[in-house]
Length: 280
Image (cartoon, rainbow, N blue to C red):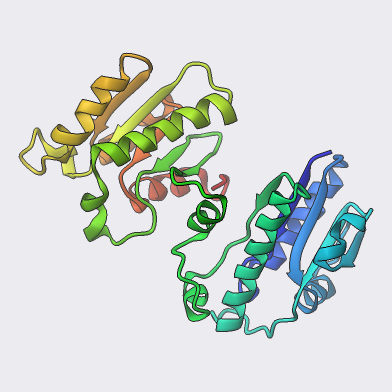
């Protein structure tokens, strides 16, 4: 039996609602999975007053989670005052507590995987939480120094070399050591997590026109191309590609993963192409 823990996300946003809708769909399929939904009880009660749950559930505390025999267990957090549509200090703290508890479930092997609802970085900051995002939280808690944010879909898979940093700082984070670590994580993900046998990775350039042979920037020639030559002895790895032409020509269809240098470079086309069908 697969066991999943699902966080509520920011309670002032769409998180709790989409979790209940997702659980309705998942449990309708009559799979054998077990679901733990971490959420303040007052928020869960409000949602199910408006949206009928089509699943059996039991409301319980975190320390009694393993005692619950229902398909869906609602793991309660302290009640949180709701202010729909607005980030608040309390909503930021609640979303952080849900994430902390979800990791504790993983560590104790109560659950095997975490599914996170959307959080508000503004609310997290208001609560004094200094992580730039959820990916960085799990990296810190698990002691993983090498990690990559990836987005998967049937249409294409993309990865980010840098995550939540200002655009003006991206070039400072681009060096051979860190880029090599990113590529190694992608290779491991393709081999171990996605069971891909024929690896094909595309790397996008940092600068317009992928640097135009050094005329617009030297990062491609000095950092990216030497690594492509190194890895091309073992796998198919191509680039650096100008991002605009790469997506316009639909070259992404030829590769298992597209590695972008910064957030919007790959997430704009990923979300446009998939129209909501994809997973982070």
